[in-house]
Length: 72
Image (cartoon, rainbow, N blue to C red; front, side, top):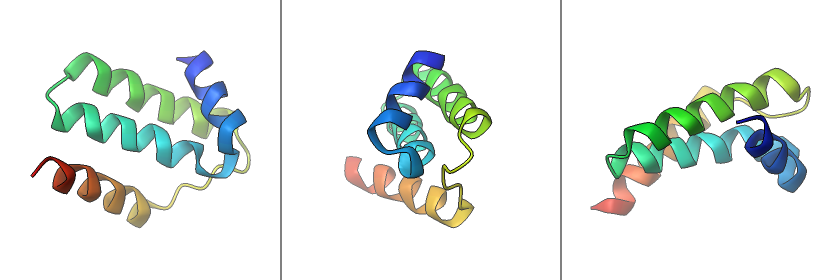
């Protein structure tokens, strides 16, 4: 979990939280419960260790909607 959080932060620190949320939403849509929980914890780890990661709830909702619509 920490390793994945650090990888996302290294790739794009400002957007790392959103990427973890996207991966969690994708896993949930695909029905992969274990992976969903993993990425949800990664998102919380990003929030914990990054002082610059953006965390706007409206963007998180939009990301989840995009993933839901991607499957349809």
